[in-house]
Length: 188
Image (cartoon, rainbow, N blue to C red; front, side):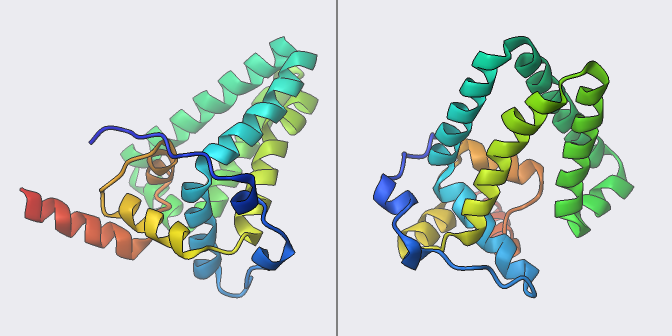
């Protein structure tokens, strides 16, 4: 299955107004996680453009530190994902505490970048876009089209870059994964 870039969603859909935003239910972490994952998949191109804009501004102001910070984050992310696939204890930790796993990646990146002296670039160039994306994904209510697109991604009809990243972090919805496994077995 080849990777397809998701379409950019219209501004009216991405940021429609106050009525399509609501505070998530913090007591139901599973439902909140599903909302975030669904929005990450549906608005992934919009999020990429938002992050690229912030990263470009910070990169223009401090290019060497931005390249260094980006390289460190990519290496730490790759190392954590590789280790979690090869070490059972990390795999279980990632499965049980996915948010803590992502926070561990960010903290490790922060400490390595602070060692090289680029903390402000890390905060504004890498963490700030991630925070904006997480806030939007947490607050934006899902639409019918959003849910349909996510089901198509989940059962393997489409494969997108965000889907690959979420698979690496094991953040897909459980029911969708079970359905995708079943369809894969039927195809064989």
